[in-house]
Length: 81
Image: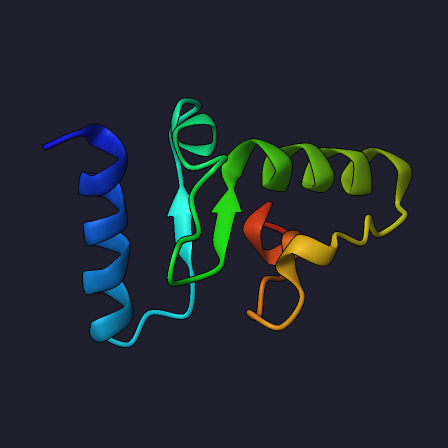
């Protein structure tokens, strides 16, 4: 089984168990799924960390359309909430 198909099957199983999104918590996973259409919204942890760091340093919330509708609070993710 190729890696992309394996990860897509895992995300499909997560959806069946009621998950709202899948966290891509490895630097290679966003690359692996770049051309795929996952059954759940995916969170690229590098983008989450970068947005949280910018927000913490500047005090300005960094909006990211990628996280809309799935209940992600970057301040809470960064340990502020």
